[in-house]
Amino acid sequence: MQKLISIILPTYNGSKWIINAVESVIAQSYTDWELLVLDDGSNDSTELIVSQIAQNDPRVRYLKNEENLGIQKTLNKGINESKGEYIARIDDDDRWTDINKLKNQVAFLEENKDYVLIGTGAILIDEEGKELSKFLMPQKDKDIRRKILSKNCFIHSSVLFRKEVALIVGGYDESGDTRHVEDYDLWLNLGTKGKFANLGSYSVSLMQREGTISNSNRINQAKRVLVLIRKFKNIYLNFRIGYSVSVARLVFFSLQKVTPFSNKLLYKIKTVYKKSNF
Image (cartoon, rainbow, N blue to C red; front, side):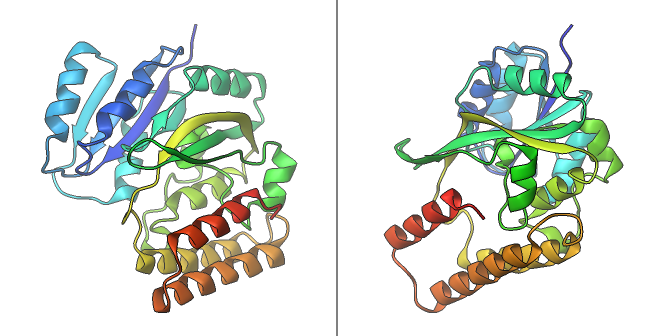
């Protein structure tokens, strides 16, 4: 008998892309899942689109916040409303490109009870669907722990984790200290209770959209990462390297705000960073 997976999809005015995300879930070879679409107060056609899909597939559940709660509270609402043993995540503008993604991840966690979180690699695309790059994350627990203070080693839309453990560590932190880094914070907390892994597959398609995260938000995000790194410096390896990398990232974003770099240069720097050892 398959274990139930609860898939959390938060959205806010995501009607343009959300049908692709939902259809990529429905296409999975693993069939014992529920999809919780958590609408954080959209005023577009998201409700109509998802409700029509839910009429044809009862595994899809549409939940709308009465008021805008923000991403962290919305994600925790999804965990609390979920019925599954495992939690998966997908954003409204991303897609799962591997139909065996869930099947392979569940098989891994079922066979390795000491692991709490597993992700995959990804393909980066633009709004027209053109591939920009593809990348894998470190796969073994020891490699992830060596690098995780230098960079977030998990793609949010790729992960599968144990609900029980997420509840033990308190789910997503809802404070302002982790806004835009709430996923990173959760992974670091989960890692105190068990092991990490990533599959060596490009199972997720991530859309790179203009204006998704403003430069000001990138700066604030980089500052919050520094706080996280200090918080976990005695738990994970290479604190000094991770801190130095994060300071450099903050300086780069700050300089970019004063003297904008070309998108081409920024893309090259990001690509080098993703392929780096730290």
